[in-house]
Structure formats: C-alpha cells, structure tokens
Amino acid sequence: MTQILIIEDEEPIRRVMVRILSEESASYEITEAEDGKKGLSKLEKNSFDLVLCDIKMPKMDGIEVLQAAKAKGIYVPFIMLTGHGNVETAVEAMKLGAYDFIAKPPDLNRLLTAVHHAIENKTLRKENLKLKRKVAQKYTIVGESEPVIKMKEMISKVAPTDARVLITGENGTGKELVAHQLHQQSDRSKENFIEVNCAAIPSELIESELFGHVKGAFTSAVKDRSGKFEAANKGTLFLDEIADMSLAAQAKVLRALQEKKIQRVGNEKDISVDVRVIAATNKDLLNEIKEGRFREDLYHRLAVIMIHVPSLDDRKEDIPLLVSHFVDLLSKEQGLEKKSFSDGAYFKLNAYPWTGNVRELRNVVERLLILGENPISSENIVQFAPK
Image 1 (tube, rainbow, N blue to C red):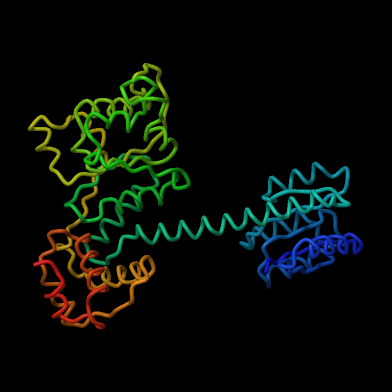
Image 2 (image 1 turned 45 degrees about the vertical axis):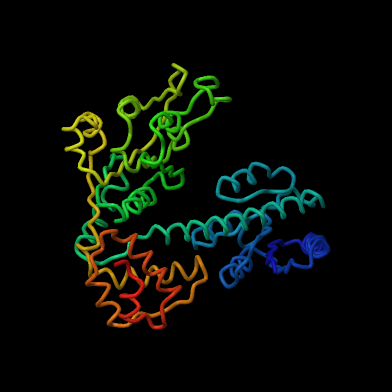
C-alpha cells in the first residue's frame, strides 16, 4: 500500500482530496491530520510515501512542518497546498526541499499528476539507494590485517582531496576496489565513475576511447563520439593497467592533466574537462621508464599519492573474513547455497600459495559453494582448489 498523509486544517478540502485519491487507486492508504503539530506527530510515528501539506495552518504552518521533518531526518516528498496569493511562500517551500506545490482548491488533474510524479520519484530514489548499497557492498574492502588497515587509513585521508593517485599491486589484489573507495568517499561521489582497462583496448583505438572522435576521423568513425574523459567530467576516471597505454596516448593524457583540456581525434577544438584521474598498474613503472615504455613526466603527474595494495600472501589473517564476505555475496548474486567452512578447510586455505590473490580466492569459494560439501572440508579444498 502507498501511505499518504494529508495535513490540512480545512475539513472540506481534506474530504475532497481523500475522495479524489481513494477513487484514483485502491492502493492509496490515506491518513489525515487537521493541523501541523498533529501532522508532524504522525510523521514521527509512521512511515509515509507522500505528504500533502497546507501552508497556512494554526499552531504550526506547513513550512515549519517541512523544516521540522527535515531536521528529524524524515525524508518523504512534500506537496504543499497554497491559497492564491501565497506563491512566494510556496516557492520558499520548494527551496527548502518540497517536491511540488498546488493551488487550493486543488484541480483534479493537477493534483493526481503531482501525486503520481512524487510517488514515482520516491520509488526511483529507493531503487537508486538500493543499487548504490549493492554497489557499495560489491566494492567493499574486506580485511582487518595491519596492511589493510593502513591502506584504508590512507584512502580516508586522500579521498576527500582531488589529488591524483597511483595504485600499485599484483594482479587480483583488488586495485579497482581502492579506486572505487577513493571515488565513493570523495566530493565527486554523486558524479560518474568511469573505468578504462588500458590493456584491453587496442593501441590504435585507445585515443578514441579516451578522448572521443569526430565523424570521418578514421574509417569506422561514422559519427561524432565523446570519450571517457568527457563521460567522467566532474567525476572520476580510473585508468587501470596504465602501463599498457601507448606512448602517443600517454602524451595526450599528460596534456589533459596539465591543462584540463582534451581534443577529440580528428579535431583541434579544445574541450575543457574537470576530472579526477586515478591510475593503477601491476608493473614497476620506474623500470618501464628506464626501458622507454612509459613517460617519466606522466609518472610524476600520476603519482602524487601512491597506494600499494598488499598481496593475499601478505594478509592471510584476512582469509576467514574474505571467505565469509564472498559466501554472502555469491549467495545473493547467484542464489548459491550458503555453506560453512571447517577449521581444517581454513587451515588448508591459509597454507595455499595465493598467486592469483583475492580474485583467485573468490573463484575458489564460488567453486566450493557449487561443488563442495556442507560444511566445506579440508578434503574439498584439496579436491577443488587449483593445484
């Protein structure tokens, strides 16, 4: 049921709105309050999907109700009801966070349209929040070992700034998790997080991927196309495996960092961009510079802050926490049965050389949930873990 609260001191208007909404949908459950104080009390005690609130009322007016609800952390869309001549007050209510306002006596179509849109908006907000929580869980950094605690502390310090970060670590350690956390804990968290795997894009296409192109720039450029820098404007661009980027592309990335401007392939027009760049690599960039495969000036631009992600072999005390996390995650994502692990199974996992790091552990847990017993035994580890 959709819970709607009507706060209105004029009973005839309340009766009209109750009748209109009840006839519109049987799924609307309507609660009434004849003044602002009673309305606020009902808001504190119950959960509502929408509030229709008069502005001018005795004891407590609609603006005060809206402000009090917001101060108490009650986030529900308000549609303000205003008499003719009170438009300025209604606009003030909108500035304070009201979803909409309608004039009294309410027009039937105007009222229903406002109600529908407000409820749809709240539903979308709920779904968006649910999705954000799901994403946050997916990119949680799990572990309480000393190397992980130090890494989390570094992330907390660096994330609120716009400093560029170079993340280093072996394959499978979770460098992308660090990049996501830097974004989520930053002031740019509401904007886009754009990820580019530089190793997965052919060298002849990397510039188009990053900077976009104009129609006719090359054979397959049949229309103008924006690149990842533009997509990440005001947000964060994560350049994973940056050591695999061509030298030509490196030069353009350097210019983008220096001047905060890019040019689409085939066009000399500058496009201003405001992007926080985070890069990651599993290679020794100083050695890559020595071998002539990476620009030293770009390295110094990227490595303002360096965060090293420890290998799983350096944080084996985190294995039980990681296993528990993956069991929860995989059971939700894939509907796999939750299984426990015996002490012997944990002993075997702890003794295993994790060359593939956390990614390899996740794959092993998934395999064990599908093929192993319940509880998972040490024999299962020997049977299903890679040799």
